Image (cartoon, rainbow, N blue to C red; front, side, top):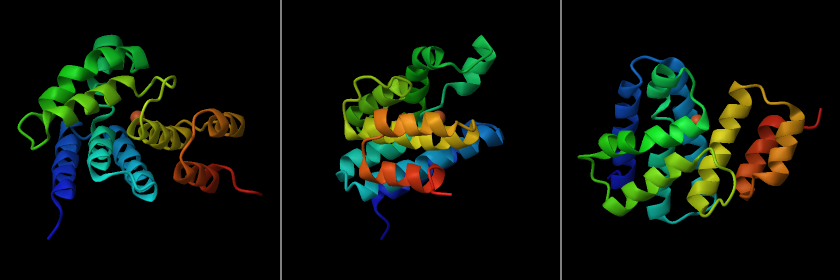
Length: 170
Ligand SMILES: [Fe+2]
């Protein structure tokens, strides 16, 4: 029997795909971030509760992007931090996710552009997963990737992925 966590994540993924109304860039971005977050979380053996929080946070982390584009004309981090909370609450309403988890997911989503005071393994992994995807989508330079490796990345699995994808010996 499939475990309950995977089922909840699958329901959230399908709902999030629908939420983005055919915007392939948004859809594929979150799917990639989720895949990296799930992989790093499992490789780092985070506990099941944290893994559940991490995966749901990865699914909804950019939920405010469509609204921010319409309201502000951009998706910069500060605007996302302002707008995400009610959207995440509404999105998770009616899903079997405890209030405590919802609170943490909201906190992660509203802070995922802030690289100071990374205060938990779920937060650390979400930032690493989002960076891996953004580095590819926005063509980050080798220097900025090397900087991220020493200043942002902390988990062994995240560092391995960063090296394997972007820092291969020629
Ligand atoms: Fe993102």
